[in-house]
Length: 106
Image 1 (cartoon, helix red, strand yellow):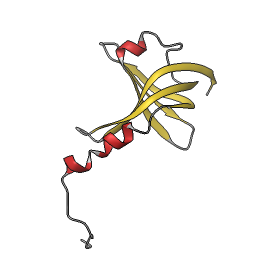
Image 2 (cartoon, helix red, strand yellow; image 1 turned 45 degrees about the horizontal axis):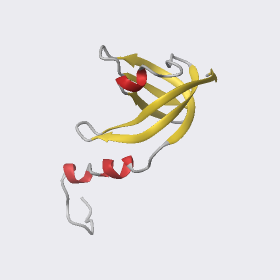
Image 3 (tube, helix red, strand yellow; image 1 turned 30 degrees about the vertical axis):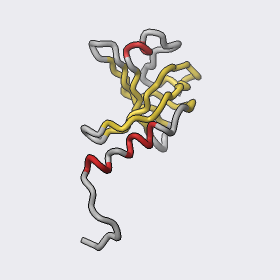
Image 4 (spheres, helix red, strand yellow; image 1 turned 45 degrees about the vertical axis):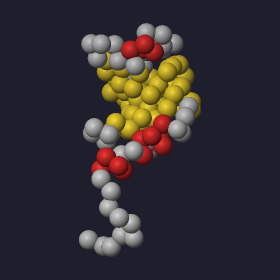
């Protein structure tokens, strides 16, 4: 192992970068929907891709009920991202989505 100039920190301490990610804030992103799925409790998950990169998206139950468009496999959509969210429990980064609009076919 090579020498690092800083003292080691715990995984929990480093995972606090999730707090900094949440501060990035809102954005509108366009991409193709992949692997959409819904929970029995009304949450939605899907991936959004442009062919070169993919991002995981999550829609909470309250927002899912009022979506302009329910994402389906292959849809080209524009999503309103409220914020990125890092779940430290498994190290997964999701975009918290507040709205989805159909933009065409992917």
